[in-house]
Length: 232
Image 1 (cartoon, rainbow, N blue to C red):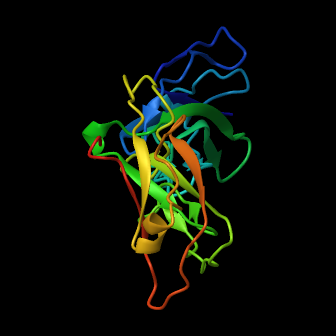
Image 2: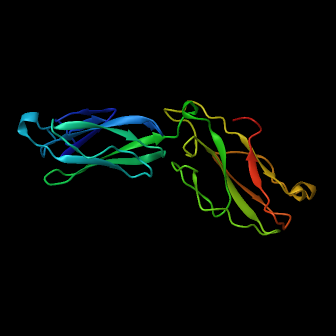
């Protein structure tokens, strides 16, 4: 078997899984380590002299993860650097070997959004069919589609960290969150003149939907932005 240990876990050959403890929550964009051991069917790590030397690599089930390279466990174990920019409470790290009898092993770890020490938080505006894409360079997938004057449009505003993860609340890495009041701004003066501006709203758990009617059909394109009144 392969035995995968993350920070917060301790080797313990007296239990069925070969380890005890709970992995520590990590912060998106920070580097942490995982250690992989070549072990017998009872999860006892092999000694170096037993010459059990599988080639092992790590994978993560979230996008843009950096999990190191394939390494031969010459000493029976090795440590891998992990860098995960996507926040998730259900991130699985999996150790895999190229050949039997070493069965792959997975461990779940929570990854918190990044604290402001890693970079400033900001507001993210998603106009359909834009979709959030945390960990990517822009944080979004798809381009905004043309809007139709007089037809209801619903957009989403997120509070995001420097990696475009939604900051949904406090974690072991984020001691406090003050959700801002978000206000949509329009280049179309008729939105104000006709009283069509949606009210500013406080974000709930780091996100909020806003609905409005575009007022004017125009060319060139108009712009929509979101403002936090200087609270971020």
